[in-house]
Image (cartoon, helix red, strand yellow):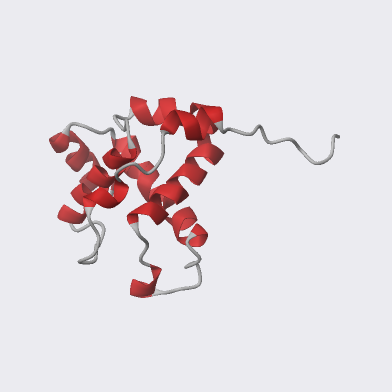
Length: 129
């Protein structure tokens, strides 16, 4: 699948391969946060907003307050860009969509700087060793 993603990223030219890989890596977090972790098959389907919330959580966990900058370095400047990537993947048969799924589901999801910088809470260990 990585070869297909590399070819798609090269052909489209807007987003780095890392953005596509990150999206796939964050799917499980998104499914869990949407309460569909135990579901199977089509019942695991999540909305665009569910995916964005999982990506936000996974991004914060992976990159902390640098997540917005990392995403921008991949060509992702707003949540609608994640929708563009999703629908590129749908077009290639690498993700599935339902009739009610639209790219506009990703519009205005959240502001990257507000989510990752302004609202970032530094994790503090519960005990000091």
